[in-house]
Image (cartoon, rainbow, N blue to C red; front, side, top):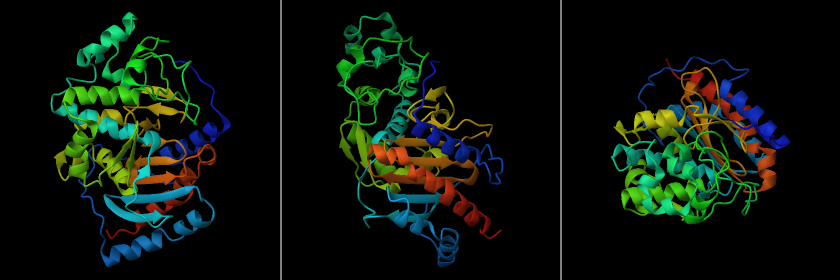
Length: 358
């Protein structure tokens, strides 16, 4: 695995994430291997609302006066929505998730495997999309599997081509993306390759025989009760509530309403360390999810998008936090969403869990 240098803002981000993932400074119980079944709830009893208000008191003030990059937030504790914040007062607005979109795509690939449309993560990409085989003369390209794409270890060179405002390689059209030279053997080196998203979308559409939006509507949007997403290039726009639902789906190991939407083994592998990862987040990586390394059977994991778009999942508390932020370089450098989770949400969730009647 190659070693990469982190920027100052990345080091700050990594420090926050490791503290969040390990629960440093907070009591933490060992999470169960088999989590208790949870039922998604967006409504609460008056008694629950009173306990929620007491536990989460002060969170609005922090967002309104100090952490103004954060635009929306939803907190879910043991399957129930316990806190919502919308700076613009629009809970149904579709919000730019940036690269957090990758984690939603991971779920769809898992459902395609469950249906037998894709054999396994170790299936060669050129077996699924044979027309790509002549595009790249490097014999290593023919050995690239779905696992390599899902773990961002395909090996394509990112040295040239357009860059995003975050400084990462911009996504390319699929034929150009597959034709790129390889800088490393597949499976050997993590590199944050945004062209993986259109490549995986093309694979999914070929395997299912359906446009992405139609397959997503059938397999995730409908079953999870999402508002209809908006697709803009390689980025999906979702309600913040629906971002939280995606995190809850993975917390529940692919189950929703006691039915498997994503295969349990795939959901578990997605949120476990598959490689050491690296920039721009500086964490280990699963299947299109970032993973905080640790000793717990189920580590903290998250979807991360440029500027402060997060789906943060903390299994020891059955806690899911979704945030959206201003999409800008400055917002990403300040890291206010993670500061808010670390210094406000985490403690509030622990207070609320402790207040639950025995």
